[in-house]
Image (cartoon, rainbow, N blue to C red; front, top):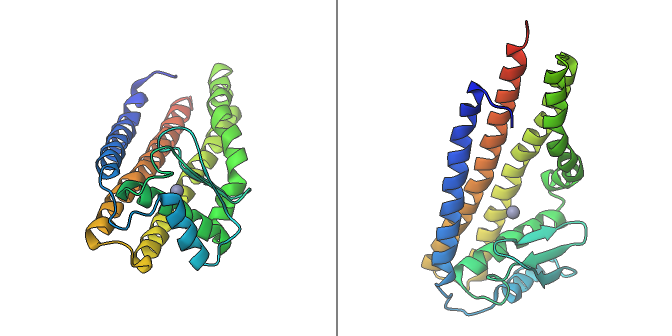
Length: 226
Ligand SMILES: [Zn+2]
């Protein structure tokens, strides 16, 4: 990592990220212990809710790890982590419903989800290459290379930005599906909202961190304008 005064710029993003992680962890732990009155395991619940929305050809499978839940649009598979699959807790129901929200986005052709999926491979490469390219630019004092690194990193920031509406929309769909199911009390729905809001904050933190990194790269490059 390049070290100079601009590194302080990264601090707010770092702190926000740590705070968001801690909030997700504590919300998830708290509501993992609260069982829903209806008692339907998360995977069964989302299958029911999705089928009501016309999504029937989806695979729902368990996956390793904690909070590693995700929806894979390419194989139309919803993977639920250890604390979620098989659990009927408020936290499990919320997380599973959020992933079901992504499945619904795919089903209904939500454009930003498609855009995000297209960007994933590009961004994976870009996030690894941006710094080395930029660094070589500094090393050879060659500004076009610095700006190339900045451009690549800007794509990573854009991806982070596009992720925000996609995630907020998935949680909105989750809340709607859970409310419409009629299975849950207001208190349970409030708990779900707390878990999902905490999770959303981690995406905001990622975006803020990435945006600050971009600002930092620009500042470093401009300082070498001599
Ligand atoms: Zn999501």
